[in-house]
Length: 241
Ligand SMILES: NC(=O)c1ccc[n+]([C@@H]2O[C@H](COP(=O)([O-])OP(=O)(O)OC[C@H]3O[C@@H](n4cnc5c(N)ncnc54)[C@H](O)[C@@H]3O)[C@@H](O)[C@H]2O)c1
Image (cartoon, rainbow, N blue to C red; front, side, top):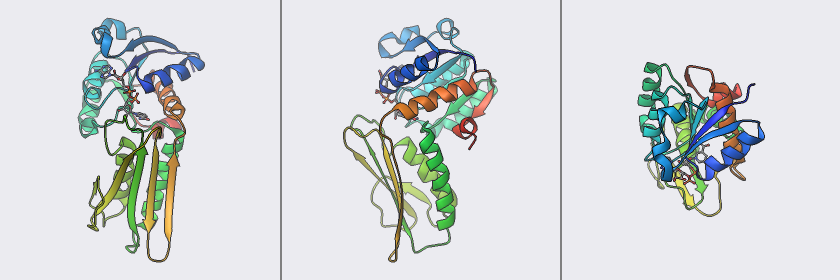
């Protein structure tokens, strides 16, 4: 694996955590874009980077990613709360012959948890006696609810369990709705629990992030993976899951 020149689009909690891991792995950060220097986000500056890693906000992610793809640089993005436009972005990336990886959660553990979630949902599919509920806990500065990870987990469950038709971000009594409870408590970096309950027994799976390092490492691994590629990829490709 060769060393990379990385552009960080968004230099908040995640941008800083990614910088630390990238430097530890021998890469260079050649551009840091955040709100005060948005005017530096030009084609000329971005061209110095082999890959752009974008962690900003639900409101800015779409435009940032599109811009970086249009400048011909592979993009890794983890911004949440904008993914109703993900299909549109993937289509744009293919048209531009670009490279893009989006993940609602870059950590190795969560991506393994996704696979367990899908398997458990598939096994539970015929067992109507189990009610399903999800809970996610994050820090109070988090802008979106439910979390992007919770949305991914919910979509995986809806894909396997026919009796659930949609997720809702409140306690629901409808058997067709999958409840996602969002709690905001400091300093939680992210906990996701999926609970199947029946009068006879319960099964619960939980992922707890202890800090942001797992997300940052996964984002750098994704950047290393996508550097010289074209196309749309996921963490399943990066982690060979
Ligand atoms: N996919 C994952 O694994 C993962 C993990 C953690 C957080 N996240 C998501 O990543 C995003 C960022 O999280 P964070 O904890 O770093 O938030 P943060 O608020 O600490 O940092 C976001 C930064 O983006 C900057 N920003 C806002 N608009 C911008 C723009 N137009 N151009 C450039 N910079 C801009 C802000 O000034 C801020 O410094 C959130 O959407 C969060 O949910 C994803």
